[in-house]
Length: 294
Image 1 (cartoon, rainbow, N blue to C red):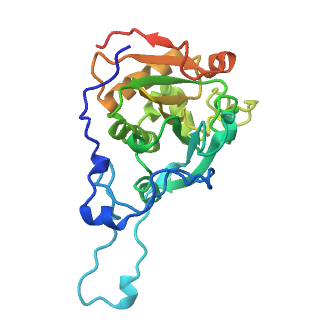
Image 2: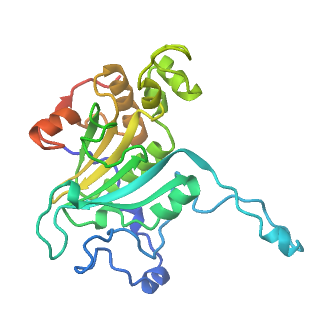
Image 3: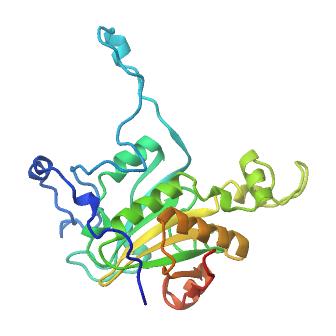
């Protein structure tokens, strides 16, 4: 099995100034006596992302302004959806192996560009996580980031296996694409229009009996994404809501290739959540996509 390797192995997340490194004493992993605490929030800085700015572009303050003007609330850029970061460790320090769902812990939610970035810049990058650890990002409609969730159960996931050392930048690019609705155009045009204007995607009128279709279409096609840090590889996956729609799956695959700038040699796999429930594995027995690049 070959892994994606066309990015630099030097993680830009590690470009921390000497002064910041000296002042930061927070450990990168949970304390053995605090197994439920995320291996995430640290008081340190990272270099500026190419995808989001770390500063808020508020109204500029000129010299000589009144104190009242100086307290203007910065502009907030809302996201279409509220998203939640989770993490999971198969074995927490000093504890026995626990079930998958028991190991999932919520970190925090966000609903704006600013709140996303203030959280994301304090998460430990994947390159500094110990195996076996997962980061999970799902929209707030997903009660629990598991296969059996009502919004996940009919869907599946695209899977990309990465060699060690290249996951930091790819994970950030994927997260930014997901929260920024880059995959919104992967829906069928008619379904996408209905979703955006709030009408029934099934084509029924306002008085038609659409059942739960209208409620279901209140959610995006992309449920979320994950990164799984393992001993010999890192695995990123992008979860979508409707596995049976092959055309939507293909659009998601092609958009994912563009977002991550994947080379032609990259092996992509797909697995439905129903199959995962049957064999109790997210990544085993997945179907390799052999569609040639255009």
